[in-house]
Amino acid sequence: MAIQWDVQGKSVIITGGAGGIGFGMATAFVKAGAQVLIVDVNDEHLQAAAKKLAAFGTIETLNVDISTYENDQKIIETAITKFGKLDVLINNAHASRQKPFDQLTDDDFALSFNTSFNPTRHLMQLAHEPLKATQGCVINFASGAGIRGQQTQAAYAAAKEAIRGLTRVVAHEWAPDGIRLNIISPIAETEGVKQWHQAAPEQYDHLVNSIPLHRLGDPEQDIGSVALFLASSASAYMTGQTLMVDGGDIQMY
Figure 1 (cartoon, rainbow, N blue to C red):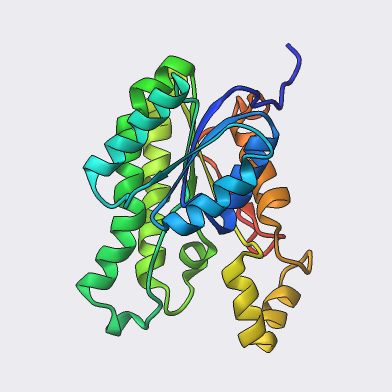
Figure 2 (figure 1 turned 90 degrees about the vertical axis):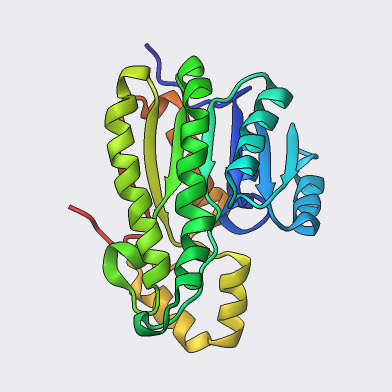
């Protein structure tokens, strides 16, 4: 059987799709012929993203706060209504506050878990039957902050590592259904990172120089291409894996 790296016609949900890595992945999928539903809490950014992506193919938008189960239901229902099926669920959205651990409050942890782990959990459960019908896949997101233990990132890292643990367990449970689940742990040159570069050029340069490939990833070309790979039959023999798409910053073994 010939290897196919093709998502033509596939139905894809991307949370946090209006900017950064989410928008980069949305661009890659739409250009590859997928039907994409981008979900974001910022309607202004969402409409701007949709306008850019419409030039390349089929794009739908949904402006909701993903922190509630009811809204997560609406996300899955919208994809099914618009596209008639669901092939790929990408849980990318996350918000958090950076503080030393001793200063983190219950609200800080709630923000991190309610914008990432909980909606990831809800959306996976809600997507199980649609993904089973299409032999689809889930792509979740981890972070070097959790894998390495980066200071001031306790709330963020805790949620990201919870997502990694959840993904590994469900990869085993859903394998008989033909559903694959994998994780991307990225470093990318997003709009926020570009602003940080302007504000703290020495810190930015230190980060870039510490990466073996000496650059930050491009959200579309570097992160989006790996997401395309994980959504395609080219990765049909992979599940439960964490892919470090970080220029060699963390080499797992």
